Length: 608
Image (cartoon, rainbow, N blue to C red; front, side, top):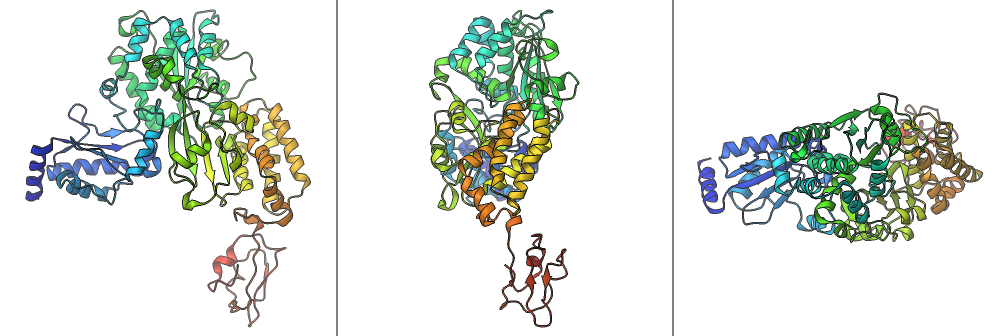
């Protein structure tokens, strides 16, 4: 220990204090980030190492999500005068090695160090809403101010009129990043000019994400809550809002905690509350924690929830910008959209609209998964194509396999074949191809994926999450799921495909809200682009990806069977005969329910 302390002292004299940060986003915490953080505290003290968590000003050492959640726990080591070194998948047992080898010894602990080419991918992104994710302490307002935080609010409140702000947002081409893609500035204009009988006007954040593949808003609220809050206050000034509400899920505990901390800090500094920054503008904001219901993210259901009602959707018009929360004009955007506003005010509309396409300016954060080398949250220029992202930014399909399909939009999205991967990642291009951005997730798969299996998951999820208010969604999704079950379990018929398509088209146009309209996209695009795969399941009774267990066919290799009888007892339907007295077992597939019990019981690999 004395030798370590002497070396630490020598290092301090040579290079100054080392800063260490630990990712404490939800994924980081889930992977043991808090334990890693505590271990750093203990080891730094025990070694008297020339290092501190965070820096002398904040001394926190925690950061939010930078997007590569599959690599958590992420730890950054900043040695003055040297490039940052990031360690991935860090466990508490690795902490002492990182300190001894790197901080004290001056040599990177290579076993846990991230590959350089992995983090080069960050440079290929267009990070705006996620700009400070993983870089600053989300619970410290001073760190946000140090990177220019709240400068846009000062500019807006002291140097611009509300109409000028709305015009700048319109000029930027910013569109809502919650999936619908409505032109943000036009929504602001309608909310600002709509009459209110008592002058009340509300501004809301949709921070609810029920799609199991999406977590962009959560990461924005966790990673840099002040950025979203600043955008919301600017929007409130631009439309003359009298109250602000951040609606999010009650299970987003870290986000809720940090949002409340951010608002309290903003009030103390004069950025929120009465007479903000010494001006005549006043507004306060609160957090509303909704139940963990997928339908809660639908705009009218969200407002009903805030009002204390069951989150049932309503038919529109009238739109919420005219008749929203408690019947007053209401402006609703998602967290990512609000977090983009400060950069537009600071850098100008022309800067933002240089990104993207003529119809979809700027960038969008995507949750990316599948059989890809790199995945996670990536904020990307809307002018990129899916193929560019898959091949260049995500490193291609693993093991050099071929791309089979791209699943866009999660459980409310659809499937595209490889030849459609060259479309740009903007709203209209996806609509033309038959899919929706939805909550902006996409997964790229090789031949190990089955279209019917993926569609069953999406339909099953939406069936369970429907509010039950309208018949097309409540009953129609169950009928679709039953048909998909038939196809995946060997009971499908060719006429089922036409029935499925007709049913999906009917639900698409008759459902009350967007859940029913979009839930059927996976089946419609599946039949449109992958009809042969459906037919192979029905006609040949084969799932080439081996995902549909109902199509498994078991048989016994007689030359390998030793007639031990081990497979007979676990079979719940009595489908196995023989198997004793030197007679090889035989499986009656008419009785077999594909439970796989016989395969697991056979110790001689005689059952296939």
